[in-house]
Each structure stands twice: as structure tokens, then as C-alpha cells.
Amino acid sequence: MPPEDRRAREKMEVQELILSAARDLFVREGYEAVSMRKIAEAIDYTPAALYVHFRDKAELMQEICRRDFGALTAETLKLANVEDPLARIYMMGATYIRFGIEHTNQYRLMFMTPHPVEVPIPEEELKKMNDPDQDGYAFFRATVQQALERGMMRMSVEDLELVTQTFWAAVHGVTAIEITHSNDPWLNLAPRERRIETMLDVALRGMLKDPGHLETVKARLREEGLL
Image: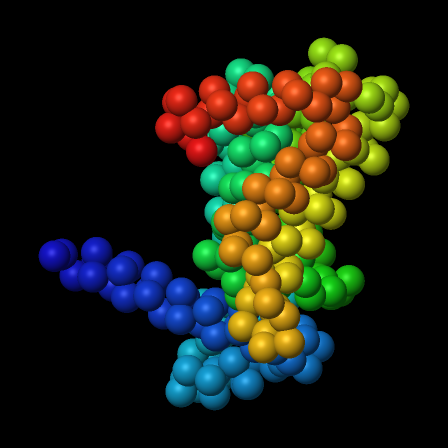
């Protein structure tokens, strides 16, 4: 391996180490309580070494958010070719939950930790806002809009934000309970996959004009190996 390639790889590895430590500390202690010195101590680095890679704590937080939200968006956009908006909504819900379960620290910081107001959203990220090809929330909202415009739901297009955010709240609830209480001895949780499927069924059936259409969609997804 050429020296410049090796140095680039080593730089990336150090950045990943710093980001992972910072993410963990932000989740456990809160953004305000964490300093660059504390992050450095967690990985046995000097604070000066961190500043080689990141200007300050805010830039660190921005990079974590860029990567983590980008990863979730990338998983979501894989469903762009699913033609039926109802099938897409169902699969997006399942994808969202599984992302959170498989990336618990990322999910905690993204959706279960207050974001510091003093950390601005970078200009290049703001440009993605409301673009369904780059913004995961915008892509989901556009999918819900398609279902509303095709008359699949009891609500009207004027309820777009309400429907989108209600379904988001439902999938977030399942994800958050799995992350925080999956090993709680006080609870006898039903099997995870049963809880996920039941929540998706209940949330969608309550919104559909024809609840039976959901079973047709699920059967087709199973035939295609997507469920």
C-alpha cells in the first residue's frame, strides 16, 4: 500500500475512533457536559490530537449527525423503487425500526437526546431539506402524500404532516422500547418481530379506507421476498 493511502486510512480510523467515543459520551452525559478533553481521555489521546481532526465540539456533533442521519436516509432510499406507496410505508417503518435496533447509540443520539441549539446545521445539509432524494423525512412524507392522493387513506392531503408524524411516532415507540427496555425484568415483552408487525398493522389499518388492502400488500411483499 502506498504511504499516502496508508496515512489516509489511518486518519479515517482515528476519526472513526473519535466519533464513536464522542457519540457514546453525548448519549450518556449530554452534549453540554462533554468537553473535547473528556473525549480525548476516553480514547487515551491528547486534546490537541483531536483538534487535528475536528475544529471543536460543535463540528464533531455536526459530523456525527451527518453520518448517522445519512446512514438512515440511505437505508430508507433503497425503497424508492417500491411502486405501491402503502407497501413503501410499511417497509419504511420496518426499515426504520431495524436501523434503530442495530445502531442503538446512533439512534439514541439522533432521536432520544435533545439536540443542542448552539450547534447549527451546516449549509450543505440545509440544502437537502425537503428534497425526497436526499432527506429521509421528506421521502417518507412524499410517500404518505402519494397514498393520500390515491385515496388509500381516510384522511385528506391537508392532513399530510399529521399522518406522517403519527406513523413516525408509532415506529419510534417500538424502537425506543426495544432499545431501553428489551432486558427489563419487570416486563415480559412479546417477541420483537410480533411487536413490530402488530404495530405496523394497527397503525396503518387505522388510517386506511380499506383495511383489507394491507393484507394484499403484505402477501405481495412476501411473494417478492421483501418481508
